[in-house]
Picture 1: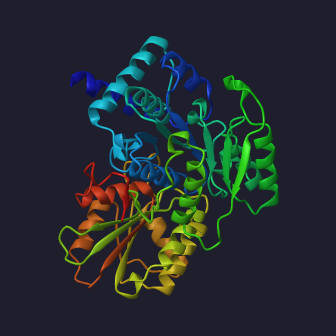
Picture 2: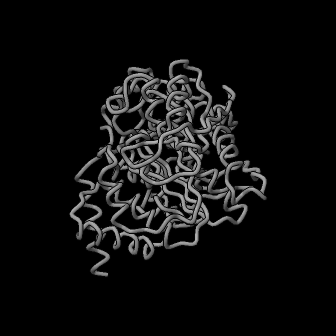
Picture 3: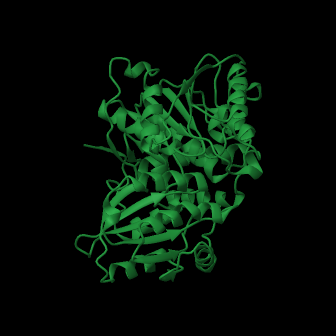
Length: 427
């Protein structure tokens, strides 16, 4: 246990290194881990919005067909083990520690400096070697071309919806961002991309696909097999994920004898996740991560398709920093104008990579958009406690914004067991 605590403390310290785009450290670290050639197939997913949901949908489909698999996603909502799921469930603490020990020993031996994200990715690769998995699903952290996950080999690459996000890092145009994301393409392998209406972004993806591969990490260069997937304008992001996951499924050799299962509903923690109130009969919390303006727009479009908003409901909102808070809040304010909540509560997400936006800042932004705040709490658990004591007849609390907020709410509700945090295809 002492050793485990030491490894966990070391992992926590890696957060001080912040974020670092670039492949040299991770490639060297992966080499130094001396993992054997993979015996599994790998699907690599990038995109501005929906990449996690696509991974979750593939995970649910593989579970339905009894195909053992590992999924690496980020961020985690409650505990770090969520980043590495085996057959949909967070990996055990003991298995995580086993992988972490091997990465720590490698770092002690080589002196390689790793970020938190790089470390957890390498732990995932070690665990993929330890577990009898047939498929590994990798979600990029940021971008694609220089994301740590890019050093892994991949049999299939998928690019989901694109939007202007992290422009200070990925580029100020959709064309530039498209190029960064599409660079997860591997030569001679399928590159499955949600159809892009922007002509410049589309051309950039075609160019990158034609010259796939990255010589900097010793990959050959050659054309990938580009496959566009048309998604209807009215499609929800779950429908988009099903379409992209289905396209990827057709290229998995381990699934060649199985049809893509009809995943009609998905429990993907923090994404349209329903959690019953522990103390108020008939009250349900609906948890939805929406971390940028386009994500909020997609979320609100999906919310509008639900009928529950005719009854009384409450809004719980918390956000991490935005380059354009007005654009982030506009779809939500429009939704609240259409379906007014009985109360609007703002809070500050805790324990994330970035500090939560102060309540006063969100309150002022909402007021400028015409929406008044009912209550504000710096700590999400205090906001949940307040909501649990109200006698307002509300049937739903919509918790929306930062994914870290959704983790805070799950903890406050006591809904943070491994079962609660598992990816499950619902009937």
